[in-house]
Length: 351
Ligand code: SAH
Image: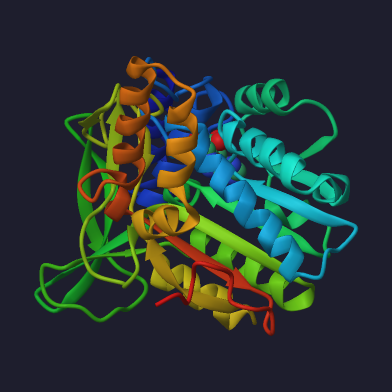
């Protein structure tokens, strides 16, 4: 048996059923056996592929977006360029390369702060990005002041709780033991919620706390945030907790720490948390709408112009993968928040 599964069984035997946020936190972030602590889960050989790993164009367009944001902020000569959960460091590398070409002063002004808990991934990021960057376990220790913050597929990995109404009473979904096996169960909930019988409602206090901290920073100093993830722009009931290993779905109870455990992001909840803290939140877009408005097709055409036929076919597949309505294009959403008074960043607010 995996050491983490043994540990979780022991915890449940000693303390009773375990909340999903605790389970998710252990599976992903246990210092020794957590999923992200083991090494590099990305790429064709790994468990999943993220947008920056699909094509350099993704990070290039975000780099251009960041330069425009920096201009809208009044070209501060010092600001914090923050990324939450940078994975392999590919997105930040593409942002810095693109921004460096478009606006060398942006690079001189940027202090790169990476929020990453995994030592293995910090090592990947150091290799990709090079020197002159700082790492943090959480946003709390990132220096305050002007900020441009990006987060791609970060919030989906931050733990959630799930509630289910049965016979008019609210229950929390938890993990218990039956015949010494991990099983999903329900216990009476300690907090309330609306919703109809049978609905599963997800609630992510940890995500809301991080979004609230972003909102506070945007309210206190000029800044922008760009959050990209799979999820929904409006809150809706539904069980979206999923485990992925080797590009396929597995049970969330199967091999704790060996699968990526995530859930869809409720952008309405994130937006409320940032707005309540004083930031201005701009209505979200699909990744498809965002990337097409940012010029994905034009950028891919430029890359294709100097490529051979085989590479052109690859570029076409990458475009579909990132922006195709039936691929990442509609499932993924993009939300931006800014300091109050800052102009709405393009392409948000575009009709
Ligand atoms: N943004 C990258 C990686 C996404 S995977 C990409 O798009 O490819 C999620 C990333 O968030 C990993 O780097 C993981 O180690 C990190 N992470 C997950 N939970 C975290 C937490 N609570 N605090 C800091 N980093 C976290």
